Length: 532
Image (tube, rainbow, N blue to C red):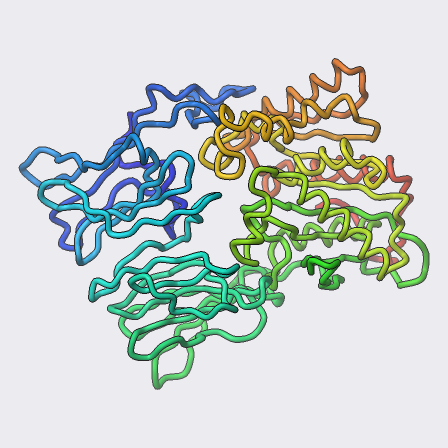
């Protein structure tokens, strides 16, 4: 039993998972109680701590989350709603109009915004959204403005709109990303006109829409009382830059001591194929076009949680460039299912997590090679982590004609061995759709392996259980198929940035060079390339 935490509220909260919310006056508290009694222990390969992680796997019982109202000198009052039909609490809060909660059905096709009576805990349905696949949860929504108007979103005709009392207030060409806050009746939000960029916007009934950022980048911010803090993350520096803006005064920059990267980018942004796939192609700094064939490393994520091709310079972009410096042309592509291109694009993976995604990676590879004949399609590797790790393994299992080696880190091999809330969103309940889970089960594909495969997993991973990789390795061993397995004791889901970084990257590069027949790199004298 836990008090003050609610495991799924990070879906709508701007500051991560929350489980307690004070009233504006500070005199009352809305809090969650989470009962894990019926949740099966997370399958771990190594003790993760004093008690096992308990997160519901697909098709298994969820934790029982209840909400309570507490005031000084009185016993807590339960919040009442149909918890059988709406077992997920995906958001809650307390504004000037009272406490509220966002609840969701297990199949995620219905979401309700509930007003809560601060005295008796009774609820009123303020808004309901339905979708035949799933209702997308947008950070910062639903919400209420200072005058009590309801802020929400609607997915209509391929666009995600911001709505005010049910009426769209954003145009069709703008894809809503998140609502960052309200100040009275003014709303601060982010949205994308071009999928690789995110701009900062505001809306108020008396002033309509205003764009508060400009130029390529991923923009964000916060405002209150006429002061805006704007954050711009672009291609200039990791971490971006921040500035404070007030009407009638010059912008004030916020000093940053972030170090500049030691690598310079040598990459081209591309739009590939009939679907207009967003991609980025990295070359070694020392490479000259036409000087000879380059082996290719496909370095994508591909899943619904993350865009890899944006106007922002982040550590993943630099990591792709680092791999390029080891002697590869590195291609990163965002295909169907990734964020930023609207609800129809996101829902193309409903019922099939991998088929459309793998097809898009193959299309992007061939289109990039058509534009850049230096790309050697006879030497193509793929690497990835998390969803990208599963995609990398699947690539050599199902398309060995295209991909000749793979590095697969922390991937979900059996979709039943992953978080229920996230996996059931795309595949439904495994009891209702077993064929969908079987179609995405790498264990069933294991006997097809004909290419070199390096599997990597941290043994204390609390995001993707390491048993996924262990079972995939066991399935390959049962089929007498050689592969390499690297297990990382005491390591969680993302080892990059830890003390293992240098060794881990070195191991991957040596594997890729060996199996793609890549010799020493030809970097300029005085600039040795080695794992950092």
